[in-house]
Length: 98
Image (cartoon, rainbow, N blue to C red; front, side, top):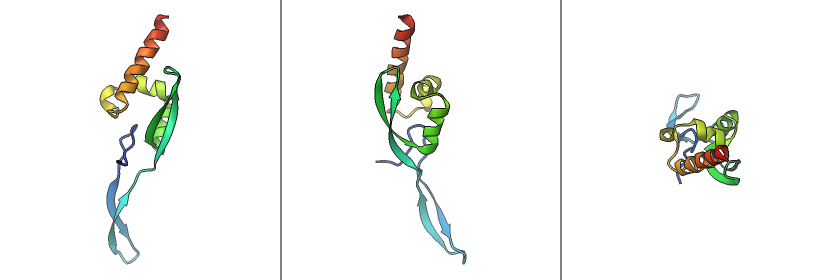
């Protein structure tokens, strides 16, 4: 399973650890990926995501999962989130029509 955030797209980076003597050893810098369940009010269910903590803050800043999905273009979303976005938009349109 890749260490990639579904919200921000952050992934592993490579670089060097540098000692005081300037010795360089290869190192992978991994993002802080967490598996979280976010509640979608439009769908009335929990959605499981693998997100970085920065991505989680982004979702909260935008007002929750439904708001984040509504404001984000499908091309910028992870392919696994595109069907969820379509479901949310359909549910929100049904609420407005009712």
